[in-house]
Image (cartoon, rainbow, N blue to C red; front, side, top):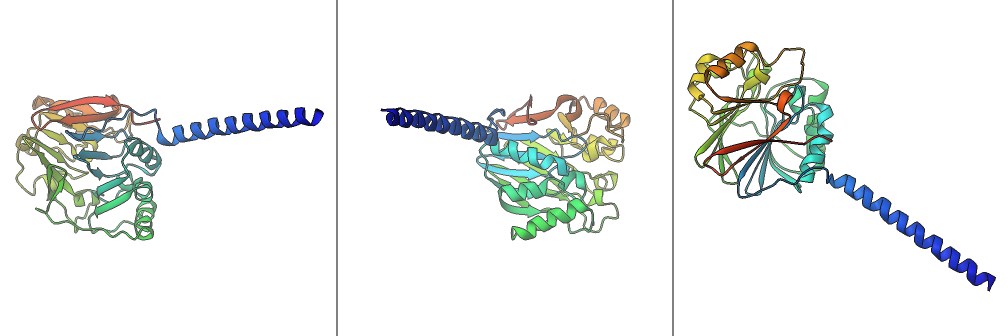
Length: 292
């Protein structure tokens, strides 16, 4: 009888232990999938997330089941970008664009490459021996990925959106001006992503009007000249910039130029991460949580 009681007690302990283990496993799974983030993917629309990555840059474009990631923020942003993108049930990034080889644009891309299936990688053919650049290139090599150097005028698609390379300069003396600049057209709407390109790039060609402009170089006065802005005349302007940054971006001069255009200005330092959604006829922007 005593033996039966002991067996019953042991069975109960085992059952409780298994239950506790299951609870712990469920908690771990919940943490991995980051259910704290709202699931927002809508394949019937064009969706663009302008991430709040401080004084850095990262933009995710989603359309019809296809994805583009333009830049990956600083090294410290990589882990959070991975968590957020995975929370959207994305396992493959079709196109990665490293606009130029500065740490605040490519620092987190090694984490991205490590954690997702990657299609095409675009980047300029320039040299920078920065530690983050070396980590990015080492990760590419470890994953047996190569990069392509696009040419001005080269076109590619992202779902139903058409993309075109508007600028790239592999010989630029200033790495900022090597930036890959992309214009994307989606039905009646157009979007321009300037990287860190400056006045030299803006003066290098004629620009067409766009609906949404992501300004160059975090709103620095070296970019977004009056001549350029009067050509693109955006209805909406996005500035990726860090709160109270040492560079005092965005500059007062650029903000005044934008205000004179009567464009609606959004800033990641004030508004956080931004989600733009478009049905091809209009753009709606709302603030979203992308950081734990």
